[in-house]
Structures are given as C-alpha cells and as structure tokens.
Length: 434
Ligand code: ASP
Image (cartoon, rainbow, N blue to C red; front, side):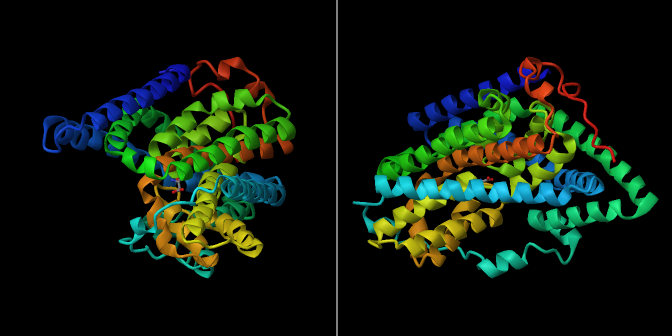
C-alpha cells in the first residue's frame, strides 16, 4: 500500500473508531449484551491489544539497533558531542518552555477554584521514584536485564556507549557497524510490514477507548480539561511552528502535514514508545532528516522528551494547589519547572505514566500527592492528546538538529511526492551504513 493510502486509511480508522466508540458509549448497551461483551470487550479489544503488542515488540530492538548505528555514525564523524548537546539542550528547552506556558495559562484560568475536595478522598497514591533514584536508574548494571524489562533510558546509555566503542575498535568495529546497519534495514522492513495493519489496529483501539471513556468526569473538571488542552494546542501550533520557521527556515505546514500519521499513532496508542517506529520512519523518509541524525535523536526523544506530559503536570500542579488552597510561591513554581522537566525524562513512553511522575512534581513542590486522584477521571483522554504533542516535539527537534548540522535533505522536505504517495521504501534512500 502506498504511503498516501496508508495515511488516509489510518486517519479513517481513527475517526471511524472514535465515532463508533462514542455511539456505543452513549447508547449505554448492557455490559453483558452482545455489543459490549462480544464486540467492545471481545473482538475490538483483542484487535487493539494485538496491534499495540506488535508495535511494542519493535521498540527495544529498534531503539537499540537504531541508536548503536546513530551513535556510531556520529562518533565516527566526530560530531557526536555537538549533536548530542544540541539535541538534549533543545529537548530540555522545549520542555521547560512548555511548563512555563502551562503555569502561566493555569494561573490565569484558575482551573482549581471552586472544586470540591471530597472527590479525591479514596485515592491511594502510587509510589513515585525519588529524584536521586531517577538519576541513578539511568545507568545500567546489566544491559540484558534492561532489555528484558524494557528500561529505555538504560538501553539508550548502553547503545550509545556501544556505538562509540565500535568506532574505536578498528576493523572489527567497522564490520560490526556494517552488520548493525543491515539489522537496522531489516527492522525497518518489519516496521513497514506491521504498519499495513495499522488502520484496523487504530480503529479497534479507538472503539474500545471511546466506548469506555468516562465522558461524565470531563464535565466536573471542565476548566482543568480545557486548560490542559489549550496549552497543548498552543505549544503544538505556536512553539513548534515558530521553531521550524525560524530555526529551519521552511514552511511549518508541510511539517504538520507529513507528521499526520505520527500524530494519529500517538493519539490512538497514547504511547510515544509504540509510536517510535512511525516517527523514525517519517522523519527520515518524509521530512528528509538524515538517517544518522534521526536514528540518534528520535529514540532519545521518545524516551526523554515529553513536552505534552510536562504541560499536563504544570497545569495539574496549579490545579491541585488551588483545590487545596495553597498559594504557590515563585520558588515553588521554579521547582515545578525543574522537577517537571526531569520528570518528563523519567516518564516511561507508555500510557498513563505521566500521572505517576506527577506525584514526584507535587512532592517536590510540597503539595499533597493525593491530589492526583482529582484528575484521574479525565486523564485517559488528555494522555492521547499529550502523547501526540510529545511525538511531534521529538520530530521538531530532529528536524532542527538535522538542518543545523547540514543533514536535512531539503529536496525531500520540499518534495510534494513525499506527501502524496510513492512507496515508503523508495521515498528517500538513505544510508545508515557505517
Ligand atoms: N503517554 C505518554 C507518552 O507515551 C506519557 C504520559 O504522559 O503518560 O508519551
């Protein structure tokens, strides 16, 4: 199936799933009836979970192989330090900007004024890791264990070190890098194969999600809900388009158009990790980011860069403070910016983890962690939207870094063909080779 058809079918699957799921939700079928038990909790649920599993299946091998290749290429060209610094710097900056915006808007809209505290009383806070532990946990003591457990930060550290070591190991290293590049090609082929099932998978996921989504909770928390969505929308449309316009000098609309499948995946899976294969493929083949840069910047971003999550955490902190009648001082606000930036690094790229690391932010700001209970009801939907922002942020930084390093193929970016069709495989032949 060509790219344009696949993108269109994914979007159709998403919208159709949303509509059918919402209809089922509002029709209030009996939980034991045919529609709920056989369709929603049966066929569609299984279809969605199999699809998610097949995406997750790719994440560990993809991040590992892709980063070994990426780090090896960059270290081999001696520009790893610069690219690494630019990448991490941009990730941190965009995340910090996102929280500052979230705090600003939340302080104007005051989402927590007039909310009844009693709703959160039955909540038992999940334990969130301490800041010190988050830092220690980045470094692996056993790479196989890290892979088995899907500990992405540890896999990243190991892959980068291995990639660098390969460039220093003479002929043996060169041979290994060449094999890794071949592995990379094979895994990307696997991505393309599994993508063919995406329209159906996305449809199943959306039906199940929206059939079960608690719309009622939204009306109780409408100001909080709108506030998070508003900041997500501002960051998504303003920050990223300004960055692309100013730092890359190209039309941001093209960027958003090419990113449609990635956004649809982020939205329907609520997982930056599960979306990673599509993000990687899209930045390289449709935006023209060099494979060496993309395979380094994107897996890193899927793991450490979560602007959308940070936005939710910023608004949630102000909301919870207001509900508990706490006036946040400038010092506390600064603490929120710092900890939410770090928390976004420690947030695993799977659904719902942003809520757990929110506990860390609240703790550091001296707010009651039980406050998380107040927003759980609406978080499922917000997770979908913030994940879409998370993955778009990764691609924005990849495009900027590639351009600044002279590794953005402007012919691909400006080529309307990269938009409408052409087989994925031959859209942009790049060499991840050593
Ligand atoms: N679902 C988000 C992601 O994967 C993380 C979160 O905010 O819960 O990017």
